[in-house]
Amino acid sequence: MKDVREWNENDLDDLVAADQKETTTLDYKGSAALAFKDKTPLKNSKGTLGEKHRHDLICDVAAMANAEGGLIIYGIRERNGGYPDGIDDGADPKMVSAEQIEQIILSNINPRVEGFVVHRIDLNSKGKGSCAFVISIPKAHKNAPHQADDKLYYRRHDATKLVMEDNEIRDMIARSLEFGKKFGIAWDLLLEIRRIVAAAKARQQSRAISGGVPGKDLMITVSPSLRSSGVAVMSFPQPLRMKAARLINTVDEYNSLVELSDGQHVLAGAAQFVTLLRQLAQDGEEICAGLEEILKDQP
Image 1 (cartoon, rainbow, N blue to C red):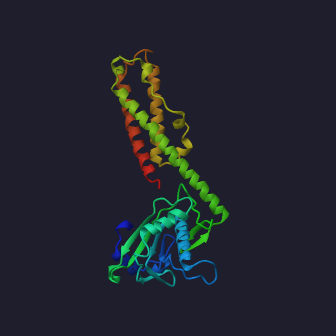
Image 2: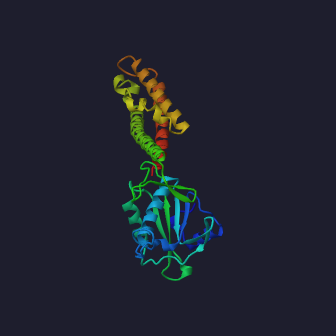
Image 3: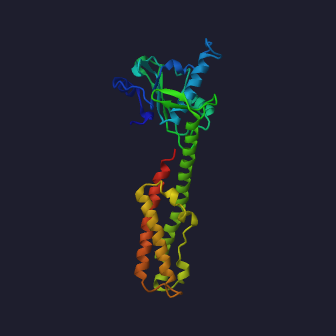
């Protein structure tokens, strides 16, 4: 999908023309819902209409983050069934701004929703001084679940938001902790394997190959955290798991050859040492590249 920061009025027209129904990841709102300064008293509860709009924004963003993430679009009329019914007259940019919307979200959801985007779309067809807004919300991971300003947790189901049940909250917290653990271990492994790669490359250039350095100085250590990371590594893609296992085996094979040398210098079988060191460096670099891709996915 096109980056929402590049959207214009034509993209809203296309969405309406496609007659895309509201889903778990798509929510339409009229521009009137951005009237946060509306002082009209509510009939059946305390507060003003503007305060209700503000609270609805907070709950809607938290609910979408706690589900699958998605888009909230202000400026599209909705007809029965959750279908778009055209672009409305828009909001007055003098009365509401992207910065104001961002601040409401940042100040009233705990923990903060990270990575969301609020984009203003000028509605040129409606005349000067009219705009719509698109809010892009990522799925919550490490900070899930997000709590609204009324101390409740919401989650979007189909085209509605519901208060989360206790078991849903506990399950999301558990998954959030597991997510954080996975990325923390990925970071630790990245640093450790980078060290092994550097050690392997340095030893390829060592004078030991010609018998100039004691064999004990050529050993490559493997940290206990890398050797005991099996459970965490199982959550990584299968090719990455296999390469990590091979890397540890190659380090052990290399160190065994060093230990079985004459006890003073590594000279005989130099080609075999170089082959293992090259394999270590190659596997290590490929694993590092895979770990970096995993870390890029962190919100």
